[in-house]
Amino acid sequence: MNELVSKVADNVGIAPDVAEKAVGMMLAFLQKEGDDEAVSAMISSIPGAEELVAQHSGGGGGFLSGLMGGGVMALGQQLMSLGLGMGEITGLARETIAVAKQYAGEDVVDQVVASVPGLSQFV
Image 1 (cartoon, one colour):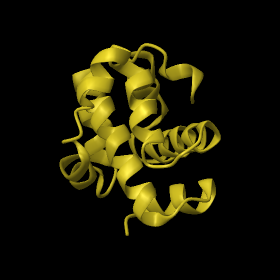
Image 2 (cartoon, helix red, strand yellow; image 1 turned 90 degrees about the vertical axis):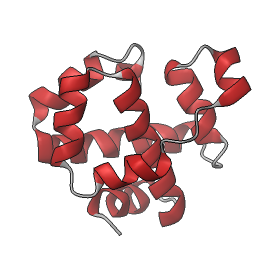
Image 3 (tube, rainbow, N blue to C red; image 1 turned 90 degrees about the horizontal axis):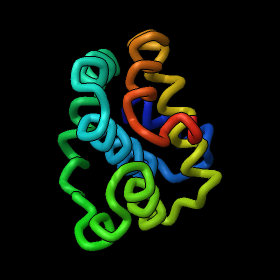
Image 4 (tube, one colour; image 1 turned 60 degrees about the horizontal axis):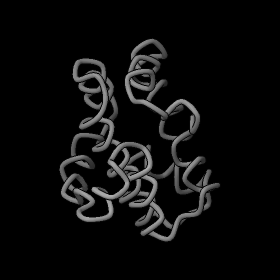
C-alpha cells in the first residue's frame, strides 16, 4: 500500500481499502477541477498518486453530481457514498494535503487548493 493511503487510513481511522478509493477520488477531483500545471506537478511528485488517480477517476458522479452542480459538494457526496462522515472527509482532505506538501512543496499545493472553489474550507 502506498504511503499516502497508509497515512490517511491510520490518521483518519478508516479501512485501507476505503482510504485508497477516497484518496484516489480526491486526487482525480483535483486533477479535474484544479489548476492543470500545479495539480500535475503535485500528483507526479507523490509516489503512487498517478496510479490512484487512474484507478479511481471513473466515478463521474452521474445524476447526483449533476444535481449538486459538481465541485466540492459532489466530491463530498461521492465520499459519503463510501461510508465516510464529514469528520472523516475533512481528515482525509487534511492528511492528503499534508502528505502532498511533503512531496510537492507548500507553494505548489497551496496553488492547487486556491484554484478549487470551496476547497480551502476543508483543508
